[in-house]
Image (cartoon, rainbow, N blue to C red; front, side, top):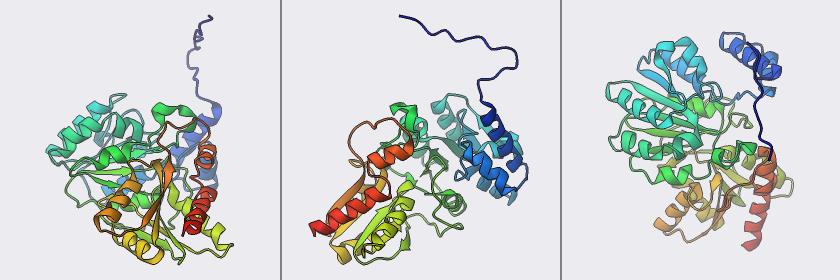
Length: 357
């Protein structure tokens, strides 16, 4: 069997494509203050993540006087878009290399001496590889740490099962004392950080890859245990998180053309969850629909089921999400269509629920 041997590189030569180099240069120009939207759109088309606004909101909060903020990442500052904070505040930015568990432990240590550490990393490396350290180092002592896990669900497409993260909600919901939230776009991420600054205790924000369809035109109302009703409808209610919020709104447009009106609620607070929209859906429609980019056996839909059972609402729950299996590999858009996590898939689930009565 032939063995692949990497070819040596000439001095100064890089495996990075010219297009990606251009994207990075454009991104840095934006960070340094150039606000040319056409330039930014070109950079985004080359793979940048406009909806990952973590670095920008943290810089703003630091400028406003939050000297306690420090940022930790494990060699993923650029793809998770916090490298801009490091450019402005290099003495408050820590890159731990490919050492996620060490990063979590160090963040816990920083929290014990008065800093507010923000960990920014891919969700599969942070929430799945680091779940033991999140539990023992951060949540058990109740430390004031913010974590944002990006590229969750199947957003990494071709990168493989190791880079898909369909189990993090199930794992993190089981950890006592951890607030778990899912901002669905860039403005939601901004609101998530801004309006939880005074919270005393650990918070995990579950985010996508940053190329989601925007939902909010400005920073929305945001509070722990809250939700936002984005569209009213009398026939059915879809309670959604993350990438499925925009998909549910698109499904509402499809169904509206058929005379079906659905209510869409952004249930961004997963733990604690807002029980009011669940109660209202059960009372109005006699069934509830949950939508998430996560395994249906243990995720947001299960949190909804807990409310239905615990309050004796006596209604059927239809879960939209990943089946209990390891996902296929492919472009994210193709995977969303295959698993019914796009607008058409959600619309089909609503029709099925209505047909079942």
